[in-house]
Length: 274
Image 1 (tube, one colour):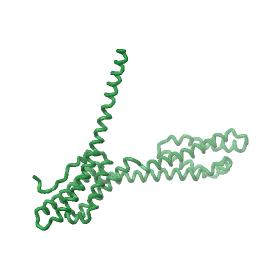
Image 2 (cartoon, one colour):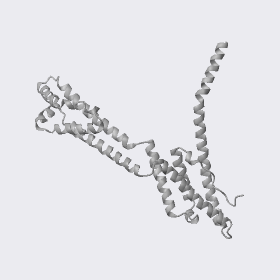
Image 3 (spheres, helix red, strand yellow):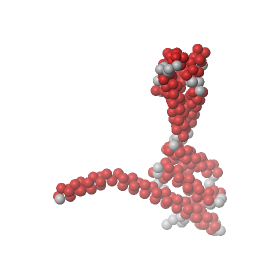
Image 4 (cartoon, one colour):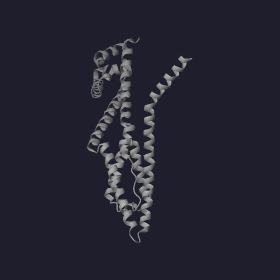
C-alpha cells in the first residue's frame, strides 16, 4: 500500500506533436499556479529552466509543422516576380505589332537583344534569380534606354528587382534557420527530453510528499504537495482521455469502409430478393 498519492501514467510518448506540446504546457501552467512549488518540492532552477526551454522548442516545431510563414512569403515574392516578368515580355511582344512604327522598332530591338530571357521564369529558383539580375543589368545599358522608355517598361524594373531580391533574402533566411535547427535537438529527441524532464520533476515532487507525510510537523507541506499532484494528475487524465478518444476515432474511420461495403452488399441482396 502506497504511503502517499502517486502520479498516474500519461502515455504522452504516444501523443501527436500538437497534443504532446499542449500536455507539457498545461502541466507547466498547473505547477506555476501553485506558488512556490519549485522551492517547496526541491526542484533545481536549472532543471526547471531546461524544461521551459524544451517546451519552447516543441512549441516552435509544432508551429512549423502547421504553417511555414516564410515559405508562404517566398511563394508570394516568386509569384510577383513571375507576374512582372510576364508583363514585361507581354508588353514587349504586343508592341511588335503596334501601329506606331517607332514603338515597333523599339520592340524589335529589345526582342532581338533580350528575347532569350523570355522563359527564365521556368528555370530553377537560383537560376531564375541570376537570370533576372542579368536581364536588369542589360536593361541599364545605354543603347536600350530609349526603347525601354518608348514601350513604358521602365516602371516595371524597380518592382522586378525588389521582388527578386526579396525572394532570395527569404529563401536564404529559411535555409539558415533550417541549418540552425539541424544543430538543435530533433523533434523526436525534444519530445523524449520533455518527458524525461517532467518525470524528474515529478519524482522530486513525489519524494517531497512522501517525506513530508511521515515527518512530524510537515502536514502543511504534505497537503500542499498532495494538492499539486492531484491537479497534475487531473491534467494527465484529461490528456490521456483525449488521446484515447482520438485513437478510437482513427480506428472507427479505418473500419468504416469495410462496414459500408457490407451494408451496400446487404442492400443489393435485399433488392435482388425482391
